[in-house]
Image 1 (cartoon, one colour):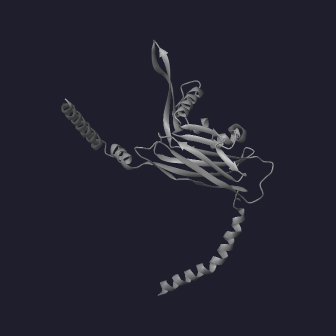
Image 2 (tube, rainbow, N blue to C red):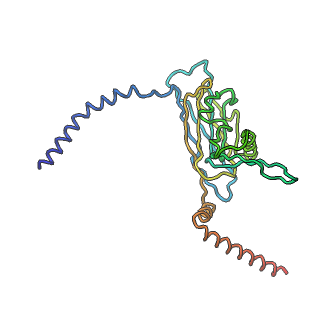
Image 3 (cartoon, helix red, strand yellow):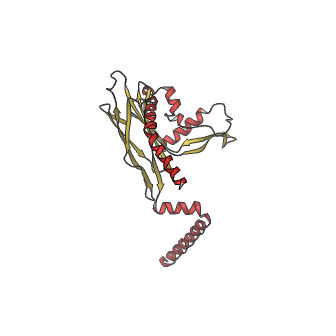
Amino acid sequence: MMRALARRLRLALMLALLPIVAPAQQAAQPNAPKPPPEQIVAGLSRDNIGITTSFDGSQILIYGAIKREAPEPENDKLAVIVTLEGPLVPITIRRKSRELGIWVNTASVGVASAPSYYAVATSGPLQEILSPRLDVQQRISIPLAMRAFSSSVRVADTKPFTEAMIRIRERQGLYKLETGGVRLVDNTLFRADFELPANLIEGAYKTRIFLLRDGQLVDRYQSAIEVRKVGLERWLYALAHEHAALYGLLALALAVVAGWAAAAVFRFVR
């Protein structure tokens, strides 16, 4: 009986103190950081992509608007940059040289984290709307998207290696810079279209939107798109990685059946 009465007294005391605690918390709120004068409100045309056996690429639309708490500045130039980044993977870049008439690998550079896919769309020329300092801080341009080298570098200059990798991936459609790819309407609405190639890998594709004025960052937005294998493609992938022995037996059985069927057809034709 006494314990129940004590619990009721504690509850009554807590309820009585609530009106005192709440104003104290409200008084602390003005010290919180104020939201930026311009904020990004954005969305994606889809937040997941399924890779099937007939997958030949996809298209993503990133759209949004700029929410303002005050009139728009008249003299500061507005710019929007949108990036789409695939999962980070390690990569080794090798250089071949001709030695005694044979092409051999003579040097290599390992990159610990390079995007498997990376596209940048801008509302204007990147070098005009983005300051070098902000580029280094946010890693927006393609050369800065690579995170770090995986081991001690044994070559005097790594720049030719990274440039070669970027050129190869640009030819494959995996790295893109689309100047003017972001369309601005009345400095309020914007949209960017991305064409994704067929050779995507699974994982989360990070979307970033940067709102800038005169090269200075005003606001940023981030979201993600999930890319996953589905259907028969997903089943075969899971079987190969989770049940390798069963996958090998199944592949062997299919090869035997295919060989037997081809022999039977050949005998019938003869």
